[in-house]
Image (cartoon, rainbow, N blue to C red; front, side, top):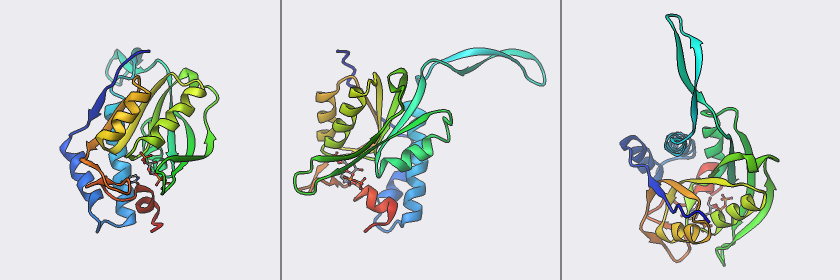
Length: 212
Ligand code: PRP
Ligand code: URA
């Protein structure tokens, strides 16, 4: 198996500023959701840095020129529900031709293990580059289960985009799926006894949808 084991932490000041605002417990639902969208687009900018392009000949108003256009494999964005949805909704604005998949999963509050309840993926996922989105990589259980499902469906090229991660979750993904690159806005210290990221930003799904 190809061993990539790459983690990219996007340390752009604009993104870090927005992340700090997201972490603030005083930040309300509307602003939290907007910040998550903006950060997702900035993460995508980095995660998609290696997309292939090829020159296309066209006429500008001034001259004829060979200019780069996206080429290569088509894209799929796959959200881990619920919280990953806000990320795919944002990223698809940058890559409107991408197909979108959904994997429903929640963490059992006692065991912290993921419980899968839904799966709908593009039928041609094996031919696409997949960008899997979930704002939180905590124990890593949800991400590993999602990647298992993607691979079982034939996906061969997967990047995980997440807003916050902890070393424990990164290790779990890397141990199970060393070919999957992780792109994140920050790597926090640790998990608390309830499996929440410290300092973190709280429960991402609840803060995005206002369910707490
Ligand atoms: C959160 C988050 C991840 C998962 C991360 O989802 O969005 O999917 O927890 O935790 P893990 O790395 O320990 O698996 P949650 O289970 O709260 O579901 P929700 O998105 O529906 O709120
Ligand atoms: N899921 C969340 O939404 N937040 C955490 O801190 C950990 C898991």
